[in-house]
View 1 (cartoon, rainbow over the protein chains, first blue to last red):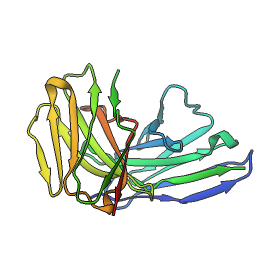
View 2: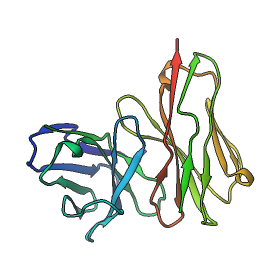
View 3: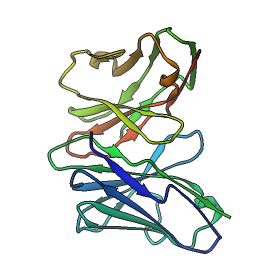
View 4: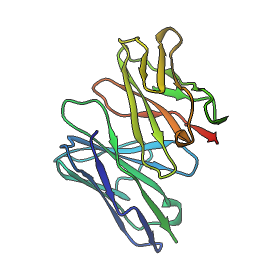
Length: 115
Length: 114
């Protein structure tokens, strides 16, 4: 199956700093990439959808100025959590969808802890 | 609006037992996709199956089988002869065709004891 990587796998930062998470599709071109967050023992909640070269579309309730998404190429999308606060601590997961497929392939996730 | 309900929060079985995970969905779309994903303790979601709404054939893949009943809006998943490695959280998800946004159920935690 298609492979998606994320970096870093874990990050701990101080409150007020910004953190960038990378999502890469390794063996396919991801026309669309998705960003989810998952709180402990909860389901995945879609944050935003990004198409290569276009602005991301954010779900209701997600602050676009706080969660900056860039999808600069068909294999790379980045999520930057700006001015992180402890309530932003979560598991962030990205997925990619290639052209001609309706299936999303997920990255391994990034665990963010904001102190 | 789309909604996926996985009523079972946790299921615990002994190895070699069969386990069935329920999934009930709601959607106004006439065509849609249904998915099952597995999330082991490592956290990565593993794709298991995608089913089109117009294809009601049941499917079997090794020890996994899926029962799609459009009349009851259900897409249940059975693991036959469970193994310890099957221990994970299993998510059912739904998307409209050509929309690609996934709506996930709450997940069912399966624990298989040796």
